[in-house]
Amino acid sequence: MSQFNPAGTVQPVRSYLVGLQARIMNALEEIEGVGGARALTDAWEKPAGEKLQGNGITRIIEGGLVFERAGCGFSDVSGPQLPPSATQHRPELAGAPFEAMGVSLVFHPRNPYVPTVHMNVRMIAAGHAGQEPVCWFGGGMDLTPYYGFDEDAVHFHRVCRDALKPYSEQLYPRFKTWCDDYFCNQHRGEQRGIGGIFFDDFSELGFEQGFAMLQSVGDALLTAYLPIVHARKNMPYGDRQRDFQLYRRGRYVEFNLVWDRGTHFGLQSGGRTESILLSMPPLAAWSYRHKAEPGSPEERLTSHYLKPRSWI
Image (cartoon, rainbow, N blue to C red; front, side, top):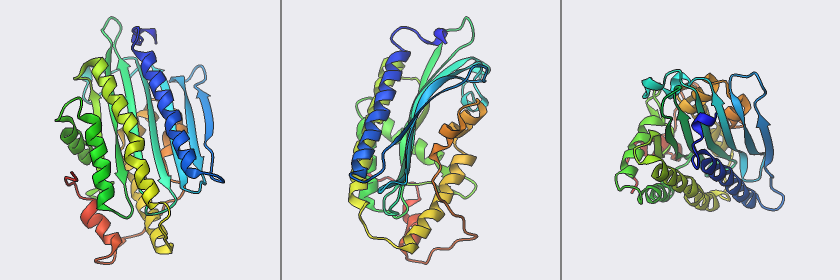
């Protein structure tokens, strides 16, 4: 889509995203250590004649010592018209051709005391023929614990704040609230996790500063998450903790399939289903009218952690 490739714009974004994916997955392989899982690398290209054109790289760890499933996908695709999920706030671009590229990841740890993490950083460019192309950024990161620790939530939010601070003191509180509002299972009136930051359709800083902010967020993921993994991955657990983890994973699945705009964008635009659904956990469970024991760590998850609050 040459009309969306002004010199010095798209290629630097692509190069950064591919490098980010490699750095993150290399770090996970280091955590897995000797005898742990290695990442499967699956480079793909959309065949001619499909609705979307483009290519990507899916990297995924399954059955690891630390990560039961950890998927990180890069994609760079173009299509003849933006799907409805991408034009809710930009009606003037309805039906416009587009190019979208990004890195999206979800890591599902084996130990219930290690939280699941999600991150996405992306750029979309679109425009009708004869129209100046419009570029915008989106993404963020959020943490979904099964057993909460205040110090983990504080650390995660501090890293998110510090990643945004060079671009405006107002971005963290704004993106934090946006994250709380977005990552909510509205049909249950329940947060997915302890939040983080989220932004979408973001272009107010201009391309150069917007791209710099995107890189700052992407680079912060390992700083935000790895110390928590190292602190929790060897904590002992039993069937009770494992069963609760699988039950809470079911709520994660509900959000991704019912509410997540990224999932909807990929499926509506004819994206690669295997890559879109790499965020799904390997195992999950549902329980009819599940009630946690009052005063238990399981009850504390919903009463204390799954409530929007200021962590810093």
